Image 1 (spheres, one colour):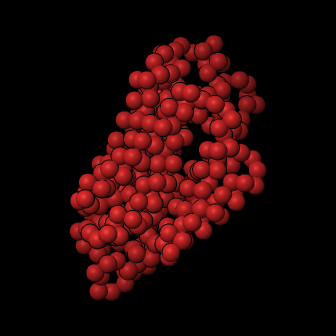
Image 2 (cartoon, rainbow, N blue to C red):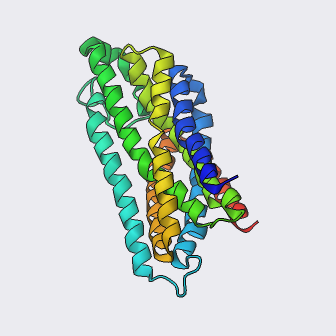
Image 3 (cartoon, helix red, strand yellow):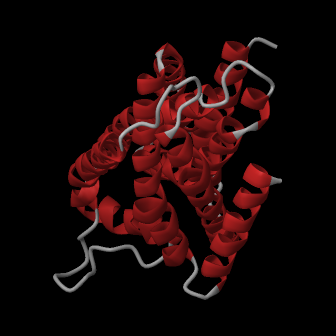
Length: 286
Protein backbone atom coordinates (compact mmCIF):
# COMPACT_ATOMS: atom_id res chain seq x y z
CA UNK A 1 0.00 0.00 0.00
CA UNK A 2 1.23 3.49 -0.84
CA UNK A 3 2.45 5.32 2.26
CA UNK A 4 0.30 8.40 1.48
CA UNK A 5 -2.82 6.27 1.31
CA UNK A 6 -1.83 4.63 4.60
CA UNK A 7 -1.35 8.04 6.25
CA UNK A 8 -4.79 9.18 5.07
CA UNK A 9 -6.50 5.98 6.23
CA UNK A 10 -4.93 5.97 9.69
CA UNK A 11 -5.50 9.71 10.18
CA UNK A 12 -9.12 9.40 9.11
CA UNK A 13 -9.63 6.64 11.67
CA UNK A 14 -7.96 8.74 14.38
CA UNK A 15 -9.63 12.04 13.49
CA UNK A 16 -13.05 11.25 12.04
CA UNK A 17 -13.37 7.90 13.83
CA UNK A 18 -12.19 9.17 17.22
CA UNK A 19 -14.41 12.24 17.34
CA UNK A 20 -17.29 10.29 15.82
CA UNK A 21 -17.00 7.64 18.50
CA UNK A 22 -16.96 10.37 21.14
CA UNK A 23 -20.04 11.91 19.58
CA UNK A 24 -21.80 8.55 19.70
CA UNK A 25 -20.87 8.09 23.37
CA UNK A 26 -22.12 11.60 24.08
CA UNK A 27 -25.42 10.81 22.35
CA UNK A 28 -25.80 7.64 24.43
CA UNK A 29 -24.07 8.96 27.53
CA UNK A 30 -23.62 6.50 30.36
CA UNK A 31 -22.03 7.88 33.48
CA UNK A 32 -20.57 4.49 34.48
CA UNK A 33 -18.23 4.72 31.48
CA UNK A 34 -16.13 7.37 33.23
CA UNK A 35 -13.62 4.94 34.73
CA UNK A 36 -13.04 3.13 31.45
CA UNK A 37 -12.51 6.39 29.54
CA UNK A 38 -10.22 7.64 32.32
CA UNK A 39 -7.99 4.58 32.06
CA UNK A 40 -7.92 4.78 28.25
CA UNK A 41 -6.88 8.43 28.35
CA UNK A 42 -4.20 7.79 30.98
CA UNK A 43 -2.84 4.84 29.02
CA UNK A 44 -2.81 6.90 25.80
CA UNK A 45 -1.00 9.72 27.60
CA UNK A 46 1.70 7.34 28.83
CA UNK A 47 2.26 5.84 25.38
CA UNK A 48 2.38 9.29 23.83
CA UNK A 49 4.87 10.52 26.42
CA UNK A 50 7.25 7.63 25.67
CA UNK A 51 6.98 8.14 21.93
CA UNK A 52 7.69 11.87 22.25
CA UNK A 53 10.60 11.63 24.69
CA UNK A 54 12.30 8.46 23.44
CA UNK A 55 11.53 8.56 19.71
CA UNK A 56 10.30 11.82 18.15
CA UNK A 57 12.69 14.19 19.95
CA UNK A 58 15.66 11.88 19.33
CA UNK A 59 14.76 11.70 15.63
CA UNK A 60 14.39 15.49 15.58
CA UNK A 61 17.94 15.97 16.89
CA UNK A 62 19.38 13.48 14.39
CA UNK A 63 17.05 13.33 11.38
CA UNK A 64 17.45 10.63 8.77
CA UNK A 65 20.00 11.57 6.04
CA UNK A 66 21.27 14.54 8.07
CA UNK A 67 25.05 15.01 7.86
CA UNK A 68 25.30 16.49 11.36
CA UNK A 69 23.05 16.62 14.44
CA UNK A 70 20.61 19.53 14.57
CA UNK A 71 21.28 22.24 17.16
CA UNK A 72 19.42 21.59 20.41
CA UNK A 73 18.25 25.23 20.39
CA UNK A 74 16.41 24.63 17.10
CA UNK A 75 14.72 21.53 18.50
CA UNK A 76 13.72 23.28 21.73
CA UNK A 77 12.46 26.37 19.88
CA UNK A 78 10.24 24.34 17.56
CA UNK A 79 9.04 22.21 20.49
CA UNK A 80 7.96 25.27 22.49
CA UNK A 81 6.35 26.69 19.35
CA UNK A 82 4.26 23.52 18.91
CA UNK A 83 3.30 23.62 22.59
CA UNK A 84 2.32 27.28 22.31
CA UNK A 85 0.16 26.79 19.21
CA UNK A 86 -1.93 24.06 20.85
CA UNK A 87 -2.11 26.08 24.06
CA UNK A 88 -3.47 29.11 22.18
CA UNK A 89 -6.02 27.02 20.31
CA UNK A 90 -7.25 25.51 23.57
CA UNK A 91 -7.35 28.95 25.16
CA UNK A 92 -9.60 30.14 22.31
CA UNK A 93 -11.85 27.09 22.75
CA UNK A 94 -12.14 27.71 26.49
CA UNK A 95 -12.87 31.40 25.99
CA UNK A 96 -15.54 30.66 23.39
CA UNK A 97 -17.33 28.07 25.51
CA UNK A 98 -16.58 28.99 29.13
CA UNK A 99 -19.73 31.11 29.33
CA UNK A 100 -21.68 27.86 29.53
CA UNK A 101 -20.06 26.75 32.78
CA UNK A 102 -21.10 29.14 35.64
CA UNK A 103 -24.87 29.02 35.99
CA UNK A 104 -25.89 27.81 39.42
CA UNK A 105 -24.48 30.34 41.86
CA UNK A 106 -21.39 32.44 42.51
CA UNK A 107 -19.71 29.60 44.38
CA UNK A 108 -20.11 27.05 41.60
CA UNK A 109 -16.60 25.96 40.47
CA UNK A 110 -15.44 26.81 36.98
CA UNK A 111 -13.48 23.56 36.75
CA UNK A 112 -15.05 20.22 35.94
CA UNK A 113 -15.42 17.69 38.74
CA UNK A 114 -16.15 14.67 36.57
CA UNK A 115 -16.97 13.59 33.04
CA UNK A 116 -20.45 15.07 33.17
CA UNK A 117 -19.20 18.54 34.02
CA UNK A 118 -16.21 18.20 31.70
CA UNK A 119 -18.54 17.98 28.71
CA UNK A 120 -21.29 20.09 30.36
CA UNK A 121 -23.75 17.19 30.23
CA UNK A 122 -25.07 17.86 33.73
CA UNK A 123 -25.53 21.58 33.12
CA UNK A 124 -28.21 21.47 30.49
CA UNK A 125 -31.25 21.34 32.75
CA UNK A 126 -30.20 24.70 34.18
CA UNK A 127 -29.41 25.98 30.69
CA UNK A 128 -32.88 25.04 29.51
CA UNK A 129 -34.35 27.11 32.33
CA UNK A 130 -32.27 30.19 31.56
CA UNK A 131 -31.38 29.89 27.87
CA UNK A 132 -33.08 28.90 24.66
CA UNK A 133 -32.40 25.69 22.78
CA UNK A 134 -31.07 27.87 19.98
CA UNK A 135 -28.32 29.21 22.23
CA UNK A 136 -27.38 25.68 23.23
CA UNK A 137 -27.22 24.69 19.58
CA UNK A 138 -25.02 27.69 18.73
CA UNK A 139 -22.74 26.73 21.61
CA UNK A 140 -22.37 23.28 20.09
CA UNK A 141 -21.59 24.74 16.66
CA UNK A 142 -18.93 27.01 18.17
CA UNK A 143 -17.38 24.02 19.92
CA UNK A 144 -17.47 22.01 16.67
CA UNK A 145 -15.63 24.76 14.76
CA UNK A 146 -13.06 25.11 17.55
CA UNK A 147 -12.41 21.37 17.69
CA UNK A 148 -12.07 21.22 13.90
CA UNK A 149 -9.39 23.95 14.02
CA UNK A 150 -7.70 22.20 16.93
CA UNK A 151 -7.49 18.95 14.94
CA UNK A 152 -5.35 20.47 12.16
CA UNK A 153 -2.06 20.62 14.12
CA UNK A 154 -2.87 17.26 15.71
CA UNK A 155 -2.95 15.84 12.18
CA UNK A 156 0.48 17.36 11.56
CA UNK A 157 1.73 15.34 14.53
CA UNK A 158 0.62 12.10 12.85
CA UNK A 159 2.05 13.11 9.48
CA UNK A 160 5.42 14.15 10.91
CA UNK A 161 5.58 10.90 12.88
CA UNK A 162 5.03 8.89 9.70
CA UNK A 163 7.68 10.98 7.92
CA UNK A 164 10.23 10.06 10.58
CA UNK A 165 10.00 6.46 9.37
CA UNK A 166 10.83 7.34 5.78
CA UNK A 167 9.28 5.40 2.91
CA UNK A 168 10.08 1.92 4.21
CA UNK A 169 8.10 -0.66 6.14
CA UNK A 170 8.81 1.20 9.40
CA UNK A 171 6.40 3.90 8.26
CA UNK A 172 3.56 1.41 8.47
CA UNK A 173 4.33 0.18 11.97
CA UNK A 174 6.30 2.87 13.84
CA UNK A 175 5.62 6.12 15.66
CA UNK A 176 3.05 7.35 13.13
CA UNK A 177 0.75 4.39 13.75
CA UNK A 178 1.08 4.76 17.52
CA UNK A 179 0.37 8.49 17.32
CA UNK A 180 -2.72 7.84 15.22
CA UNK A 181 -4.02 5.43 17.86
CA UNK A 182 -3.40 7.65 20.87
CA UNK A 183 -4.77 10.77 19.15
CA UNK A 184 -7.85 8.76 18.24
CA UNK A 185 -8.33 7.96 21.93
CA UNK A 186 -7.71 11.60 22.81
CA UNK A 187 -10.43 12.69 20.37
CA UNK A 188 -13.15 10.72 22.17
CA UNK A 189 -13.83 13.33 24.92
CA UNK A 190 -13.64 16.11 22.32
CA UNK A 191 -16.34 14.39 20.29
CA UNK A 192 -18.48 14.12 23.40
CA UNK A 193 -18.01 17.85 24.02
CA UNK A 194 -19.42 18.59 20.55
CA UNK A 195 -22.38 16.21 20.32
CA UNK A 196 -23.93 16.83 23.76
CA UNK A 197 -24.74 20.56 23.23
CA UNK A 198 -25.90 19.92 19.65
CA UNK A 199 -28.36 17.27 20.81
CA UNK A 200 -29.47 19.37 23.79
CA UNK A 201 -30.02 22.26 21.38
CA UNK A 202 -32.52 20.24 19.36
CA UNK A 203 -30.47 18.46 16.71
CA UNK A 204 -31.36 14.81 16.16
CA UNK A 205 -28.84 12.28 17.43
CA UNK A 206 -27.69 10.86 14.08
CA UNK A 207 -27.00 14.25 12.40
CA UNK A 208 -25.25 15.42 15.58
CA UNK A 209 -22.96 12.38 15.59
CA UNK A 210 -22.21 12.79 11.88
CA UNK A 211 -21.42 16.50 12.29
CA UNK A 212 -19.20 15.65 15.24
CA UNK A 213 -17.32 13.10 13.15
CA UNK A 214 -16.76 15.71 10.43
CA UNK A 215 -14.93 17.94 12.91
CA UNK A 216 -12.14 15.36 12.74
CA UNK A 217 -11.69 15.78 8.97
CA UNK A 218 -9.07 18.60 9.28
CA UNK A 219 -6.83 16.02 10.94
CA UNK A 220 -6.32 14.45 7.50
CA UNK A 221 -5.25 17.77 5.98
CA UNK A 222 -2.82 18.36 8.83
CA UNK A 223 -1.37 14.86 8.46
CA UNK A 224 -0.67 15.32 4.75
CA UNK A 225 0.93 18.70 5.46
CA UNK A 226 3.07 17.31 8.28
CA UNK A 227 4.17 14.32 6.20
CA UNK A 228 5.18 16.33 3.14
CA UNK A 229 7.01 18.92 5.22
CA UNK A 230 8.87 16.17 7.01
CA UNK A 231 9.95 14.56 3.74
CA UNK A 232 11.34 17.79 2.22
CA UNK A 233 14.72 17.92 4.00
CA UNK A 234 16.40 16.88 7.25
CA UNK A 235 15.86 20.36 8.70
CA UNK A 236 12.16 20.35 7.81
CA UNK A 237 11.84 16.88 9.34
CA UNK A 238 13.51 18.20 12.51
CA UNK A 239 11.13 21.17 12.68
CA UNK A 240 8.07 18.99 11.99
CA UNK A 241 9.02 16.41 14.63
CA UNK A 242 9.86 19.10 17.18
CA UNK A 243 6.56 20.90 16.54
CA UNK A 244 4.75 17.58 16.84
CA UNK A 245 6.54 16.83 20.11
CA UNK A 246 5.58 20.18 21.64
CA UNK A 247 1.97 19.79 20.53
CA UNK A 248 1.78 16.31 22.03
CA UNK A 249 3.40 17.38 25.31
CA UNK A 250 0.61 19.92 25.73
CA UNK A 251 -2.01 17.32 24.82
CA UNK A 252 -0.59 14.92 27.43
CA UNK A 253 -0.11 17.35 30.32
CA UNK A 254 -2.77 19.90 29.45
CA UNK A 255 -5.60 17.60 28.34
CA UNK A 256 -5.25 13.83 28.60
CA UNK A 257 -3.99 13.47 32.17
CA UNK A 258 -6.14 16.26 33.71
CA UNK A 259 -9.24 14.86 31.98
CA UNK A 260 -8.43 11.35 33.15
CA UNK A 261 -8.02 12.45 36.76
CA UNK A 262 -11.24 14.48 36.67
CA UNK A 263 -13.13 11.45 35.40
CA UNK A 264 -11.81 9.11 38.09
CA UNK A 265 -10.21 10.51 41.22
CA UNK A 266 -8.04 7.56 42.23
CA UNK A 267 -4.52 6.22 41.86
CA UNK A 268 -5.46 4.06 38.87
CA UNK A 269 -5.00 6.75 36.17
CA UNK A 270 -1.38 7.21 37.33
CA UNK A 271 -0.84 3.44 37.12
CA UNK A 272 -2.39 3.34 33.65
CA UNK A 273 -0.02 6.13 32.60
CA UNK A 274 2.98 4.09 33.76
CA UNK A 275 1.67 1.05 31.89
CA UNK A 276 1.28 3.23 28.80
CA UNK A 277 4.85 4.48 29.09
CA UNK A 278 6.10 0.89 29.39
CA UNK A 279 4.12 -0.14 26.31
CA UNK A 280 5.53 2.87 24.46
CA UNK A 281 9.08 1.81 25.29
CA UNK A 282 8.36 -1.74 24.13
CA UNK A 283 6.98 -0.39 20.87
CA UNK A 284 10.11 1.70 20.31
CA UNK A 285 12.80 -0.75 21.41
CA UNK A 286 10.98 -4.06 21.22
